[in-house]
Image (cartoon, rainbow, N blue to C red):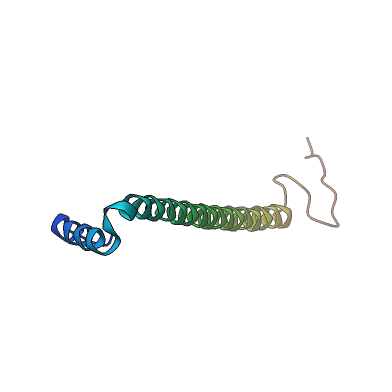
Length: 97
């Protein structure tokens, strides 16, 4: 994620050991680990919420598109006269024998 090599981690560990000392270093490492876990969990929560919103938006857009398509098809079906139906104003007559 941050592209930190192993040698850089060793250098940071050595500086932390010198600055904090061997007594406080384990407690500081636990605190840093806990903060990283909380930050990671918060980020995952935000990410999951964002993905839910995007999925919800896509579903609404798809449903809206389908609704428009169905309405268009219904309008075209209503506008098309039925096969064999008499035109408006005329009655259908039986053929003469």
